Amino acid sequence: MANIRILNGEAFPVEMHKVRVIQKLNLPPVEERAKAVTLAGNNTFLLRNRDVFLDMLTDSGVNAMSDNQLSAMLRADDSYAGSETFFRLQESLDHVFQKEFFLPAHQGRACEHILAKTFVKKGSIVPMNYHFTTTKAHITELGGQVLEIPTKEAYKITSACPFKGNLDIEALKEALQKHAGRIPFVRLEAGTNLIGGQPLSLDNIKETYAVCKKAGVPLVLDASLLSDNLHFIKTREDKYKRLSILEITREIARHSDIIYFSARKLSSARGGGICTSNKDYYLLMRELVPMYEGFLTYGGMSVREMEAMAVGLVETMDENVISQGPEFIDYMTRQLAAAGVPVVTPGGGLGCHLDAKAFLPHIDQRQYPSGALAVALYIISGVRGMERGTLSEQRDENGNEPLADMELVRLAMPRRVFTMSQVKYAIDRIVWLHKNAGLVGGLTWDEEPRVLRFFYGRLLPVGDWQERLVEKFKQDFGDSL
Ligand code: F0G
Image (tube, rainbow, N blue to C red; front, side, top):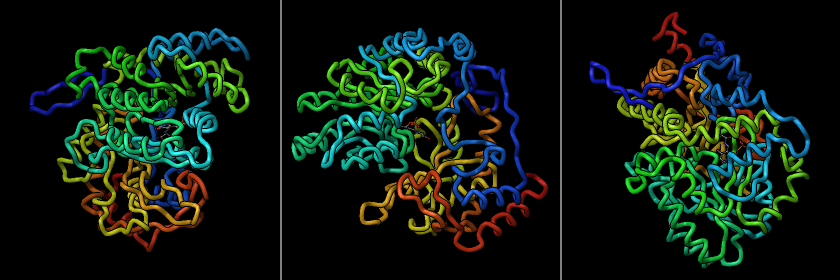
C-alpha cells in the first residue's frame, strides 16, 4: 500500500488495485433504517442487506477477489474424488505453510469441530491467547473448558503495545503444570478477533511453541486472521523486518503443529482447512472429514472456492495485497481517536473497534452497550457493525451470564471492498453519534437462543430512545440521508 502525503500535509493510504466489478448500494432514509432494525429484532445480523449501506459486519466471505482468483475459478476441475483442483490447492498450501498433510473443510468452524471432536473430551482444558465464539462453543459442547491467558495489555483499550494478541508465556507454563494431563492442545489465534484484531508477534509464537514442545502438548494455530498478522509482524517487529512475508509465514508454520483457517478470511475466498506434518494427528482427524464435511479432496467446498483459495493464498504473500485492510483500519482508528471517539488502539486487523463502554458509559453492561451502539450506528448511518461484547458471550450451565471483558463494536474492513470516501462517511457519522451518545439507551432480550445467541437472538430497546435519536438526526442533517 502506498502511503501518500498530499500538499496540505495530510497522509492517507492509497489503494494498490483498481475496481473493475461493482455492486450498487442503497442508503435508505433514516426512518426506514429505524424500521428495518426493529424488524431485525435490534440485531444487526438479522438486517436484510438491501437495507444496509456499508456492510462492516464482517470480513468473512465478503472480501473482493482478484482478477486472477476469478479466472482460476473458471478452470476448476469438478469431480467428487481426486480433482486436479484439490492438488493445485494442496500445492499452494504446501508453498506457504510447508506442511505435509491437508484436510479440507467447508469453513473455519468446521475445522474447529474436527479438532475439538478429535482432541477434546469432558474435563479438557484448552489454554489460548483468546477465544473465538465458534472455537469456544465447540470446546464447551464437548465438556471442555477454555483457559484464556493473553498478555495483560490485551485488555487495555488504549495502548501502544504493538502485539496485544500475545500469549502470556509464564501463565502458559503454570497452566501446563497445574493441568498436566488435561490439556489436549494449546491454541494461538493470529489477529485475535474478539479483542480488536490484535496481532501476535513471531517471537511469541516461537516461545509458545518451545514451551508446548517441552510439555509434549501440540500447538494449534488458528490462522484465519493471519494475513493482517503477517503485515504487523513485517511492520512492527523490528527483528523480522527483513524477512519476506513468505519467509515470515513459513517461520510461523514451522513453529506450530497444526494450522487451521477460515478461507473466508485468509485468502479472500471461501472454505477452510487443516494442515499438519504430524501423521498421527492427520489420521485421527481424517476420519471425521468424510463424515461431516465431504470426501477428502473437497471437504464440503465447491471446487471454485478451492481454486480461488489456491490463488488467494499465494497472493497473500504480497505485502501490497495484505496491507490494504490494516492501513484503512489504521486511518479510521486514528481519525476517530483524534476526534475523541473511544477506539481500540493501536489499530489492529479485521476492523476498527469502538469501545462501547466508554462511548455509552451510562448504559449498564446488562443492557448491552455494544449491541445498543451497533443498532444506533446503523440507524444514523446505514453502516452495519457487529456487537462484540456481552451479547457475544454465552450463559454458563447455571444460566448465569458472564459479562464480557470488553464491550466493542466491530466495524470490519472487508479487504479491497470500500473506498476512502466511504470510510470518511463512516467516520463522520460515528463522530456525530459520539456527540449525541447521551440519546442512546440499552437493549433487553425478546428471544434469547441457548448457543451463539448473538447470531439470531432478538432484542427490544429499553424506552423510546430510537425515536429520539431519529428526531435529532433529522434536526441536524435535514434532508440528507
Ligand atoms: N477463527 C477465527 C479467528 C475467526 O475469526 C472465525 C470467523 C472462525 C475461526 C470461524 O471461521 O466463519 O469460516 O467458520 N470469524 C467470522 C467473523 C465469523 O465474522 O469474525 P468460519
